[in-house]
Image (cartoon, rainbow, N blue to C red):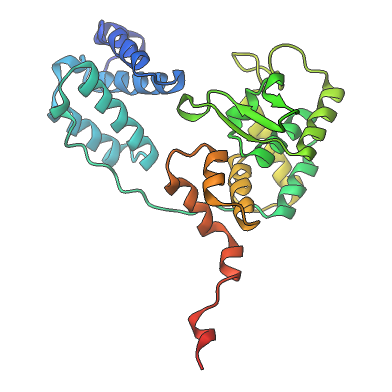
Amino acid sequence: MGVHAGSMEDVMGKLHDRMEEDLQLGGYSPKTREVYLFHARKLAAHFGRSPEVMGDAEVRAYMLHLVQERKVSDATYRQVRAALRFLFRQTLGRPLDVEWLPVRRPKRRLPAILGREEVQGILGAVRDPMCRAIFTVMYASGLRILEACRLRPGDVDSKRMALMVRNGKGGVDRITLLSPRLLEDLRNYWRACHPSGEWLFPGKSPKGHASPDTVRQAFHKALSEAGVGKRVTPHSLRHAFATHLIESGTDVTVVQALMGHRSMKATLVYTHLSTAHLTGTRSPLDQLG
């Protein structure tokens, strides 16, 4: 437990490199590889020795430590569980040490949804033209913040009126909407800012595109100026995209494809958020004689 982060490579020995290779062979995205390796190092740091000499007892003790003492979120628990299952099953070849790890039952909390007028107010309150263009893309096409920040000029296909999202969540590419109004907004942004280089939205991130942290700051400032009191984040623009599409009658399978959801369950959440589905349904009370 007293091992410093700098010595973790020594503690894990060649295991780190082997796990990295296994993740690459499995086709995992760079972000997922980074997260899985991080949690493997954290396990080693907690006990001060390599996972190679650990078993199900240490895994159980570590997961209980995260839940009972660290009070980690359900999302973090699922991340750690996935990382350790990969480590023990694939890299160490000892699936029985992690096979018992339960899936934590998620507490379903519906996110706050921005109305159309609120979205319009937020976009109108953004002073920086690049941030405004990023938020417009997120709402118009359903992109995650990092997906929007990493857009390249060539991803905007004006002939097919489509937007290419490369290396999205899970390393998956997809095609989504490019509306005429969004295309015009992007052209206005291009004429105003003249971005150069490989990125449509250049910035100060390590790779040279717009920094998601900078974009988040601009969003929260716009929230305040627009007088929107809901607890929302830039990701709420993506939620609004899906919800407003369903409210306008778009088939849920189409929304699933545009959002890049692997599971229909993730998309069906937006039917619960759609007030149009509620207002169009009659209560049985109203049908009594």
